[in-house]
Amino acid sequence: QVQLVESGGGLVQAGDSLRLSCAVSGSGLSSYAIAWFRQVPAMDREFVAAIGRNNYPYYADSVKGRFTISKGNVKDTYLQMDTLKLEDTAVYFCAATRAVLSSIRDPDVYNYWGRGTQVTVSS
Image 1 (tube, rainbow, N blue to C red):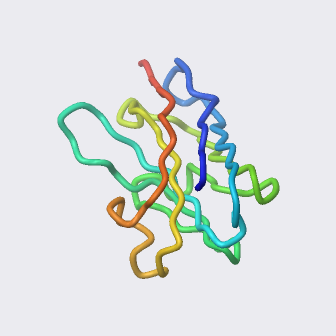
Image 2: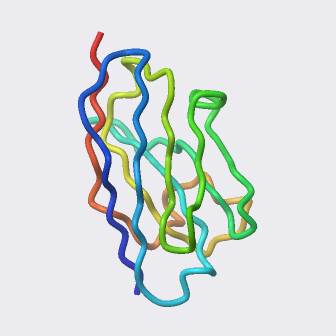
C-alpha cells in the first residue's frame, strides 16, 4: 500500500516558475518509479515526467527543457516547472508504479495516485 500527496500548485503568470512536491509513504518505496501526469476536463491524462528507480528522468516533449523532475529522498519527488505557459494549466497528479521502463509513460500501469494539485497559468 502506497499513498501519495501532491502539493505546491497555485496561480502564476506565464513565464513564472512553480515547484510541485509529491510526498510518498508506505512500504517498499524504493521499488517504485514516480511520475507526474496532468489532466484538464474532458481530456485524457497526459504524461509529464517520470523518474525511475535509478533516478533516470523521462520527459514529455512539451515540457522538455522547462520542467525538471528530481528526488530529494526516497519519500519526496519534485517537479520544478520553469517558463510556465498557459497550456500548462491543469490538475497535476503524481503516481507510483513498478512497471517496466517501456510502460513508464502509460497512465494505465500506475497503481497509486495522489488527489492532484491545481496549477493555473494566466497571461
